[in-house]
Length: 359
Image 1 (cartoon, one colour):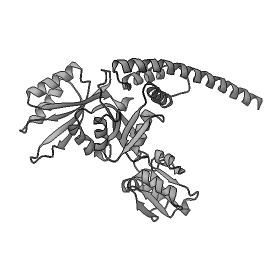
Image 2 (image 1 turned 120 degrees about the horizontal axis):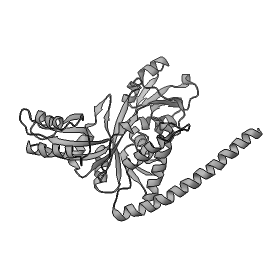
Image 3 (image 1 turned 135 degrees about the vertical axis):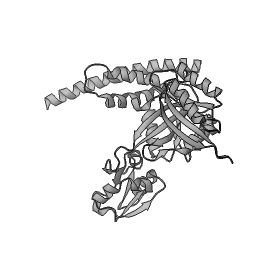
Image 4 (image 1 turned 45 degrees about the horizontal axis):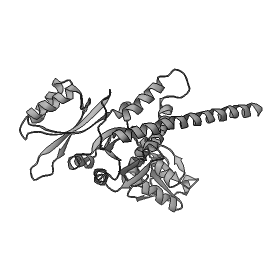
């Protein structure tokens, strides 16, 4: 016992030192915040945060792996940004959704969050400058692109993509019942329920009454209010409504991922590993899209996504959404824009940001 007490004493001393150093770090953060507000520079600097994490990961020795270092420092960054300037983030609600989880993973527990009913509402409140950041889904690797997000970029040209993040979508089975046999009804969004049918079959729960909910977040709320019930929901929804998690990861497809955009009103600095997103409207004639893609090929720029969206006018015309490697200030990208214009294409730049799949 004496040895245990000595070890705990050592930990307490280190904790005191860590807190002292964090407070010292925050003093520098406040000074940087004053300089940024004076110059109008953005508070959120994804490329700087990535550089810090990469530098720390490359240090030799220690028990902390990349995931642990990222988890610790992303929260430190979020606290730091709130000291520089209080953060308010709008996101596609309601509370407890995977978009909420994605937003909190980047902006931390200290930030103020505003759930909104639609993706367009997030764009709108950003355009009105009532919040500085917005978080919306852009695509899922099983369901495809989120058309509402793509369409909003045409309606709100001043809103820019400043970061992307990928979130593994894990459904949890939550209930206040200690014994799974006591569960008489299961709440979930139909999509979430259908993505977990193998788990339900394996645990003989397919015959339990299924009650559809508007979202998995609402499912967690309903399970918290109704005895002998369970919900299929996100971890953040279970935490929000204080419902115990019986099974942590129950979805059939363990590779289910959703990509989210962080939106704001500023331009990121040029950095290695950047991606750029654009909307391209080509001439309505044979070969116009091929001509545009050929320009990218000639400049040796890798296109990572191409999506067609209807313009929603009387004529059956489309606009193309593209992601490609590079920053808008790269010479090759500027060449593409100039040559595309000469070919009659209209290019709308949506943002240049770090590749979130490599962070």
